[in-house]
Amino acid sequence: MGNVSETPRDETPNKEERVEIPSDEAITKEEEDLLNRRPFVEHVVSLIEANIKPPYSIGIYGDWGSGKTSIMRLIKEKLEATGKYRIIWFDAWEYENEANLIYPLVRLIQKEIPRSRFKKVAKGVRKIFYVLTKAGLEVAARLSSGDVIGIGKLEKYEADYFKKYARVFDNWIDQVGRVKEEFKVLTQAACEPKEKKEEKKECIIIFIDDLDRCLPENSIKILESIKNIFSQGNCIFILGVDKKTIARVIEGRYPTLTDGECKDYLAKIVPFGFDVPECEVLDFDKYFKYLMYDKLKIDPQIIKVDLSKIPNICVSSRLHNPRKLKRALITFYLYTKIKQSGGFHSDLSNDMRKVGVDDQDVLMFSLLCEFWSDLFERVLISNHELAELTAIARNRGFRDWTTEFSDERTHPIIKNFAADHNLYQFLWGWQNPQTDDFVNVLIRVGKLMGLRKK
Image 1 (cartoon, rainbow, N blue to C red):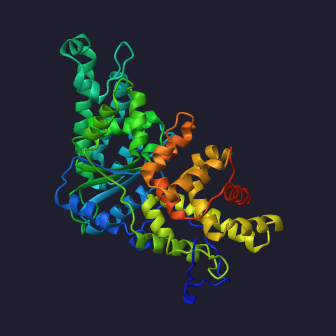
Image 2: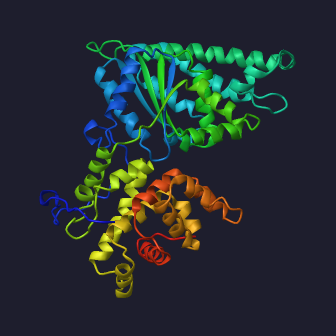
Image 3: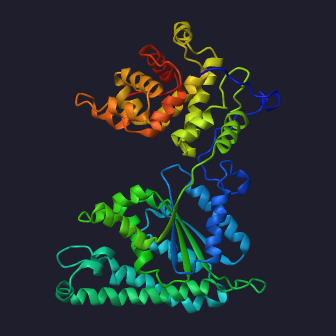
């Protein structure tokens, strides 16, 4: 990939230091924020402090591994520092096996109540559990035909339908009203000072994480409870979710809803949301150096990669998923260890030199396999397509690249990837003459790194 710039000697890691495999755990402190999410976090916190009053819900949206939990942890740290709020962190997936996810959430709120107020709200808490279990919002929310009453349907059904099932609806509305009132009392009590020096909190802020990892029925229970049950509580909900996953859950629960109605459904529950912000080149540069040199202890004097180019390629290709970046670098780390230990057969090493595969190409290939796994697993079965895609991306514009694969004879998978502008930017940035032999050698290297095709 052209000239390779060496890292200054003072950045060269100590070979005696122990390697740390980057963790998938979310960051919890601002000093760990290498991707510079601080401005976004401060923006959200300032909005909460200045403009958002309970009850309210905020969404932090992003794909798997995009950093939703890290951002929520940083928001939590900032809000805790103000001393104005009672903070509760609810990991929905941790309570996945509970009969009803609302129970552990209510109990977490109950734990925040001062001892002096505990007895006064205990009866109300029992009433909430009783209604959820016995009177059964889930049971009461079902029609005799077995249909489910969701928020969208409650708003759409005509008057004659309400009349037909008046008894069921009356019971449902009555029970919801009771739970709402008790929940309001509960959240107000949880804001009272726990000790003499503590001031009364303005409201409770409840972070709900990993909701999209739960079973669909549990995800829906939480979402609908936020709208139906918790809508009068003195609390603000901050939910970290993958919008696409939640949209599929809503679609599965209410198959008659259109895509637009599924989005409206979520917007009624979470009216205010942000996508996880993307990163800048300088942030990527710092992030890669930290992972490669500080954590994985890759010696830049032995393994030659040009980190002046990688961040630009990541930004132009929108490779903003920290978890996938870590996994790609761990794969590359395995390559460096195999190479340093002489694990490549001489014929493979010779072929790498012959076709021009170097360390930089292996790193790029690791990124490709992580961010476009379907391309690796399905298209590279014939290997030729990547070389062809790359040649067109390098020599022509995106429009020509897309048009080239519009022929009816083109495999549908190729057509899908030919419409991927991010992949085009990635292959264009790679800038290596990827012949069929070049791709074949990379795949042979990939097998030694644990990368396999189906």
